[in-house]
Image (cartoon, rainbow, N blue to C red; front, top):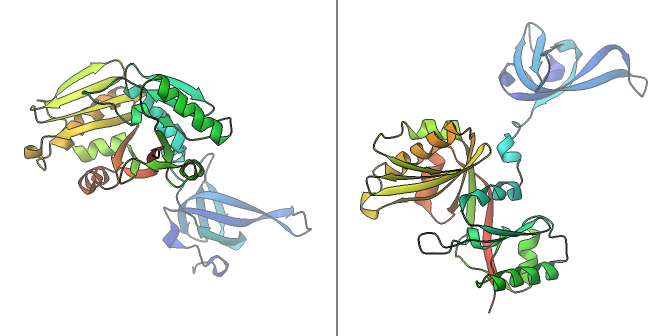
Length: 301
């Protein structure tokens, strides 16, 4: 039997993909007096024998005779839960990374200060998470950020979503980027990334302290992770220059993800500079994709 001519954008080619199908409800009258219509959104399971079968996200599959189809088309896949999280929600997962972190809310913003790690102050832990509504006009928020970091004896820094309204507003007040390239925040399924990494090496030394873990490998590579609910943040993955391109980074990540999975983590996130092609290639090969991009700003002059 040929495909239904009125459904030319549907057909056997959409089986296994997400579609929306508009159909007639036999015996029912619509608000204008004509036949009642309804839409079904879901995955097409079958297109054959005069019927289209669609599986919605919830409930039983719906069987639709071709003769009742008014129109239909494929639609993009629904974004995963992890990618539906806002940039602010993802960034808040980083608070667990640093022991001794001091925070102060400013509306939706979070002002952060932390002790040095390995002898240096990390920008991420010592910057205002300036995403969302500060609850006050931007000039007042800017003064509050300056005052907070003055109390903590450090320069004011703001983390802002690239090219967002806060980025534009602070830039208009003279704040400038403190790095050449913006930073990408990337997410991946823990299970997928772990499969891509392969089996964790037996020789890895894993040190766990509460929600945080650190792995050392052959004295040549290391990395850290912290679990927050079912999310795990990876950071500080480093390999000695003379041992790079030997698979050690993957083995470090494999060990951290194996531990994170045992803690119930299902989503992994990390930060990578956008001018780091080797890092971007590694994370892409493990299934990480960019969720959003941010910059660090500080007052000019």
